[in-house]
Structures are given as C-alpha cells and as structure tokens.
Amino acid sequence: MSAAIAQWRGFKAATRLGWQISSNWTRPLLFVIYSVLRPLSAAFILVVMYRVISGGAPGTAAYLAFLVSGVAFWSFVQYGFSGLSNGISEDRGEYKMLKYVYTSPAHFYVYLLGRGLAQLGSALASAIIVLVVATIALRLPIDPLHVNYPLLLVGSFLALLAVIGMAMAFGLLLLQAIDSHGYGELGAGVLYVISGAIFPITVLPGALAAIGSLLPLAYWMEIIRRSLLGANAIRMFPALSDADVLLRLLVTTTATLLLAHLVFTWADRLARQKGLIDRESNW
Amino acid sequence: MNHPSASRIFFKTIAARAYPRVVASFRNRTWLVTETLLPLVGTIAMIYVYRGLHAPARYLGFVVLGGVMLAFWQNVIWAMATQFFWDRGAGNLELFAMAPTSLAAILLGMAFGGAYVSLTRAVTVLVVASILFGVGYSAAGLLPALGVFVLTISALYCLGMLLASLFLFYQREAWQLADAMQEPIYFLSGFYFPVRSLGAVVGGIGSLIPLTLGLDAIRQLVLPGTPQFIPVRWEILAVVVQIAVYAILSQVSLRYLERRAREDARLILRST
Image 1 (cartoon, rainbow over the protein chains, first blue to last red):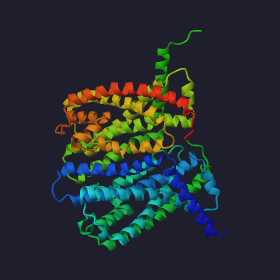
Image 2: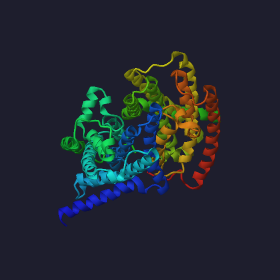
Image 3: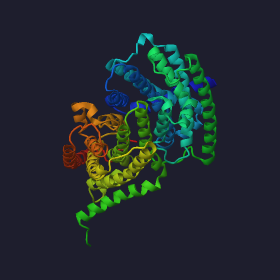
Image 4: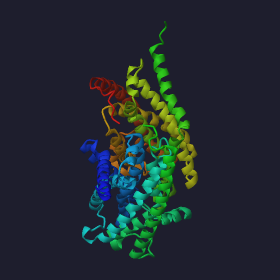
C-alpha cells in the first residue's frame, strides 16, 4: 500500500470519526434543534440589539446584513477552532485513543485535518440556515444570483486553513493541562472579539485593533461581506480593493500557518518529552 | 449505637456536597480562568457591539448585568443540570444512590456550592467590566437590587435542581442539550438587551426562566431609564412564586425520575 493511500485512509477515518463524535451519538431531532437554534439565537440577539438602538429606522438593512453575515460564518470558527482544539484533549482524556492515533500510519496532521473537516460540515449547515432564515425574515440585501462565489470560496478556503492551523496548535498546547475544559471556547471567544465578526475592528482600542488586523479572520469577514452584499456591504477596510483584501488574507494566512506549525511542533515535542500523550486527565 | 437523625444527615449531606465545590473554586485554577473569562469575554464582545452602534451608556450596563447573570446560568447548566450525567459517567451516582441520604440533599449541596463559586466569578465580571467601560449604577437601587438578586438566584437553582433530575434520562446527548440551552436562553432572557424589546409573547415565554424577570427588575432598580417590561413589584412576586413552584416540581420530578432510573438501570449506565 502506497503512503498516499495510507494517508487518504487515515483522513477518511478521521473525518468519519469526527462527524460521529459530533453528531451520531445523539437523537437526530435533538441534533437538528441544537444545530439550528444556537446560531439562529446568536444572530437574533444581535438583531434585537441593533433594533433597540436603531428603532427600526429605514436604511438599517445594510448594518443588519453586516451583523448577520458575520455571526453566520462565525460558526466555522466556533466549530473549527473550539471543536478541534477540544477534540484533541477529548481524544486523550475521554476516549483514551490519542496514543493510538500517534502510532497509526497516518500523519498526525492528516488525522487532525480530517477531524477538523467534520466540524466544518456542521458549521456549513449552521451558516446556510442562519443566512437563509435571516435573509428572508429581515429582508437582507443578499441575492444568491449576485453573490461573488469565487471570491467567497477562495477567501473561505484560506481562512479555514488558518482556523484549522490555529486550532491544531492551540489543541496541542492544551495537552499541557490536565483539565482544559472550556479553553477551546475561550480561545474562540477571544477571536470573536478581535476579528470584526460582529462590529468593525476600528471600535476596538488601538492595540487590540492592531492585533485583529494581523489575523486573517478580519480580512475573511470583509471578503464574506463584499462577496455576499456587493455594493451594499459596510466596509471595515474601505481603502482596500477586493484584490488587496484577498492579498492580505493570503499573507496573514501564510504567516498564521507558519506560526501555527512552529507552535504545534514545539508543543508536540514537549508533550512527547513529558509523556503527556496518554496522560490520565479529568474525565 | 446512636444513629444520627434524618435531618442531621440531610444537612451534613448538603455541607459535604457543597464543600468540594467551594474548595475546587480555588484549587482548580484552570476552571477559575474559564469560568471567569468566558462570561467576561462574551460581555466585552457585546459591549463593543453597542459601542459600534453608538448606544447610550446605560446599554453597556444592560450587558454587564447580563454577563453577571450569565455566569450563574452557565453554572446551573454545566454544574447542576448536567451534574448527575457527569457523576454517572464517573461512577459517583451509584454511590450517591447507595448512601443513607437523599439525592435532594445532594442537589441542594451542589446548588449552594455552585452559587458560591458563580458569585466569585460574577463579581469579577461585574467589577472588571464596569471599571473597564465606565459603567455606573444608581446607588439608591443597590440594596433592593441585591434582594432581587438573592431571590432570582434561589429560583434559578431550584430550576437547576429540576433540570438535574430531567437530565438523568439523557445519555451522551446531554452535552448537546446543555449546549442548546445557551444562546437560545441568552436570547429569551434578554441577557444583552431590555426584555421589553422581545414583546409580550416572547418575553412572557422567556419569563419562565427566573433570570428574565430577575434581570429586568435589577436593571430597573440600578439603571435608571431601563424600558419597563412589567413593574418591579410584579417581577419580584413572580420570582418568589417560581422559587416555590420549581422547588416543589424538582422534588416531585426527582422522586419520580429516580424511581424510573432505578427501574431502567440508568443510575449505573456509563454514557461517556
């Protein structure tokens, strides 16, 4: 069996495992309710907040679209980042199988990529539901026939690579803790504040805004809004063209992946040296 | 040999179950970080949303008080409602069932311990967010608001005891169910906006959760200008009724579901 086939098999098994862990052990109805209610509620919290302040004044659809598009696509970070980084600790502590993944023929990156991809499947369903429901209910200026799909797909592909890279590195760092419950959500929460998902990063204090502009997520949010809303999009980077934003996304994603690889390698070596791969933890 | 009285065992059980929670609140540093920072980060995100909208300053206060209550709701969901689920997974539930005490006393102990832990986290959220964003409160309303807060937390933990007995019947999906009780409840309870904005029907449904009316009453007392959902005195009365109703329901439900769980062998079922 060639090495490529072994990696492909490992990838498929990891994706299937990730999907089953996140969905297949619950009742389908409960899973659907859970998948729909959470993101919709998060979106409608922001809608009500906005309506409370704007008082339903005319011309509010553009800002509502800004909020809804951000929160809809945020599910990719929520599921991808916290799901994958928590998953590494769960594989070790709850399922006690991390050591077997390490000893399998598939590269650890390949396994984690598959595990992350399964999380992104749930996120895709969540994002589509929020966008469809909110567009219809709030009459948002999103026309599926006029969406810039190539820009959206390229931007999302790059950003999701960055998200999975960050989640892998963060997940390996979490192996240092005996009990890291909640840290994945905390990491995603911090990114939520500094990424421009629900408010322009210019609202943040200077240092936080600067950190936000070094991350790929702010540029991804900008690309999402420009591709979905076209001229109606409220822009966080009005001076930049679409190509400029995409270029910045590419550069920040590359830098994030390099940094994530360094952190991952260091945390992996440390975990092996300390014997943390099969450590008993609080489950 | 003298046996301790039933009431002594009951109260000793409450103290014994509350003790590890209180001790763990200082000993488990990793939880200290997440339990404090998770509600704080969520609160800060929503404050910046209002800042982005150039909202009046009192709206920042709405969010901060919502963040304070959020710490309690998360504790009720993850450390009350789902606790028997975790205990069953760890093998403790069968020991609880064999001990010469009642599950009600164990739940009360969890509630007291959990309320204490959440209080320490909530105070941090309140102080840090209020100082960071310059949120002020009406001094005249602080004492009555404290009274409403105590009533609200009592009703909330009674609801938590009710949920804990219901969760005995869930397997691994308990995790998803608890997850599903986050953002939808933040929305229904008006954690980040005045409850009045939800309208009578949605606000009325949300009022089944003690946090909704309690939070609205506290906001009316300490943040002048809060749009009134219903008058404070009615909200206080409703919360007091909820304490009684949820306390009774939780005991009835616990007895029934404990019996069912014994019959179905769910007390020893490993689900994690």
